Each structure stands twice: as structure tokens, then as C-alpha cells.
Length: 110
Length: 114
Image 1: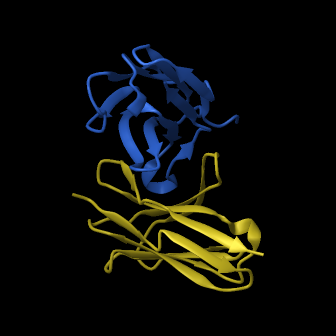
Image 2 (image 1 turned 180 degrees about the horizontal axis):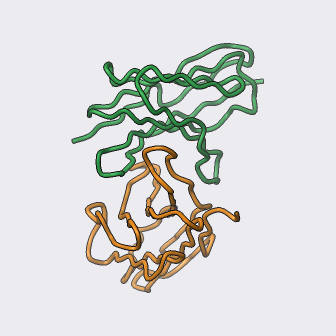
Image 3 (image 1 turned 30 degrees about the vertical axis):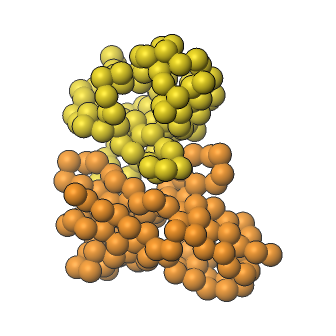
């Protein structure tokens, strides 16, 4: 059974600090996605990682993918309050299905 | 493009009633997915279509749930009869090519069964 595990599930941090969210998955895949969800809202695509070693950055967020280790990271640099949200990683299976992790609820304290 | 459009945004119904959720995918997207989100179970894939054909419905909880895609611009998810445990947010998503682009999600339908 495919597992997509995020760590931590809850994170409270101070503005200005750096932190990393980890996403481990249990099957072979070379496609990984990161989404953001604000409370009561839909999911917004942040990053699409298409190959081993892929690294993408947008503002204070940077995502990377290591397909050999089956690990992706989402790094937050100098966090600001606006980044408070739930972040999901998701993995593509061979049959075009995308399976999501449980999400990491990030709360950034001003 | 208006994005993926779902209706209604909110639905409150009594147990035993039929509920129909609707979705209009982004024009040109060949893939359509229905997900359910709850606090306890997270995001669950219910069913997906490719070119209007159901490909995998293994996530549909039971026979009370059914989904159709009569044409490229419209899909429905029906629950009959509804039960309180069906209360959740139901998302529709579409994609041109999941491998390259991932999905674009609609705004969701918050269903409450009382």
C-alpha cells in the first residue's frame, strides 16, 4: 500500500526562522507535487517536481526531490505570517493518480 | 479561463436524501478527478475519468456513491441515500497531463448531512 508521510504534521514557528517540511513516500515515482491550502479554501499548486534532483524556488519556499531516497523537502526561509497554511505533498502513481500526504499545518507567529 | 467550477459551494441535506455535486473542468483538460477531504482521513481519491471514461473508481466508498461524465465539460458525483458520515468537502480537479502539470482544483463543495 502506498504511503505518503509528511513530517511534521503541525508546526508553529516564529517569523524570521527557517524550517523544513519532509515528505517520504513508499513507492517508485519521479513526480512529486506540493500544494498549499488556506483554511476553508481550495488547494493551490506550488511546485511540480519532475525528476530526481529537481529543485524549485518561489519566494521564501524551496522544494527538492530525491527519488532514490523517496524524499522531498519543502524549505521555508525567513518565515513570514502570510505563509501560514496547510502544505500537502503528493505523489504520482503509474496510472496518473496522485496520492496526497496528510498535510502539514504551519502556523507562523508574528 | 475560469478554472475548475464546482457547484453548489455549500449543501446541507437531511439523511436519506439524494445529493448531486457538479463539476465543470478546465476546457481542454482530459482528466477529471473527484476527491473527498475530511479531518480524519485527509484527501481521498474517489474516482477519476480520462476522456470522459471512468478509469478507476476503487476509492468510491460504497454503492451509494456514483459518478458520471456525460461530456468533456461536465461531471456529477451523486450520493443516494446520503448519511451523516458523508459530510465532508468534495473537490473536483482537472488536468491536461497529471505527470507534467499536476492538478487544478475547484473551490470544493462543503456537504453537511444532518
